[in-house]
Length: 374
Image (tube, rainbow, N blue to C red):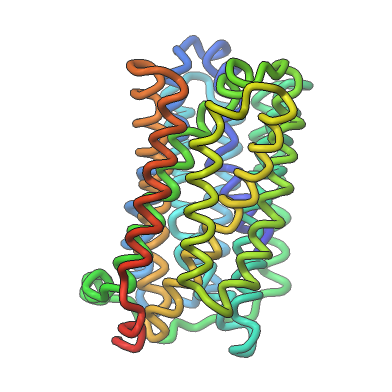
C-alpha cells in the first residue's frame, strides 16, 4: 500500500521538477506547463469523494488494482505524448487514479491490522506519500536531467506495473463494509470535528504548496544556493519529511490536538523566519530541513484526526479529506504563482505562515468531546 501511495503521489508531482524540459520540448510556457500539476490536483479532488460512492459494494482490492493500472496507462501516455494536449489528457487520468487510491488507501490500511496498530499502519501507508515528496520528485528530476523527461514518466509507469503485481499477490480480498452514499459525505461535513480536520488539511497544504512550488527560486535568491545544489537540498527536505511522518504518527496516538497545533506552529515559524534568517546557504538548508520535519507530519496528523472523528465512516471522511488535500495542492500552487508574479517572491512564505497560524487557531478552538458524535 505504501509503495502504491508512493507511485501515485510521485505521478502527481513529477512535473514539478520537469516543467522546464517539458515546456521546451512541447513548446509551451512554464506557466502553461504548470497545468500538469494543477489538472490532476483538481481532478483528484473531484474523484476522491465521488469514487467511493460510484464503486458501491465492489471489492476494494479490484478497485485499487484498476486505479494503479490506470496510472500505468496514463504515464505511458505521457511518455509517448506527441503534443501538450495529449500530455494534459494523460494528466487527467492520473488525477482519477490519485483521488481514488488516496481515498481508499487509509481505510484499507486500518482494516489490515489490530486496532492498537492503526496509527502505525496509517503512518506506513502515508509514509509512501511523504517518501514520494522526498525521493520521488528529486529522483524523477534527476532521471529527466540525465536522460529525457519522457524516460522519467516511462520508469514511473514501470514502477506502477510492479505495484499491480504486488497488490495481486499480497492484498487479501477487501469486500466493502457498506457502500458510501453521497448523503454519508454530507453527514461527515456536518460533524464539527471532521470539519475542523478538513479545514486544517486545506490551510496547511495550500500554505505549504503556495511556497514550496517556488522552492527553487526561493533558495537561489534568498539563501544564495547554487542551482545544482537544489536537488540535494530537496533530498534533505524529504528525509526530514519521512522522520516527521513517523514522529507525528507516534505522537498522534497520544494527543492528536497538541500534535497538529505543534506542526502548524512549527511550519508557520519556519516560513516566517525564511526571509529574515535564511540568508545564507547553511541557514537556508537548516530551515528547509525543519520545514520538511513539520510538513512531513501533516498527512498522517490530519488523517489520524479524521479517523478519530469518524470511526464509523472512515471511507467517507477520508474521501472528503483527500478531496480537500488535492484541491489545496492545486489552489496553493495557483495562488502562490499569482503572489510570486504580482507581489514579491518572499510574499509566498508570509502567506504560507499566515495559513499555518490560522490552522492552529482552528484546531485549538474545536471541542474534541464531539469525536464520539457519529
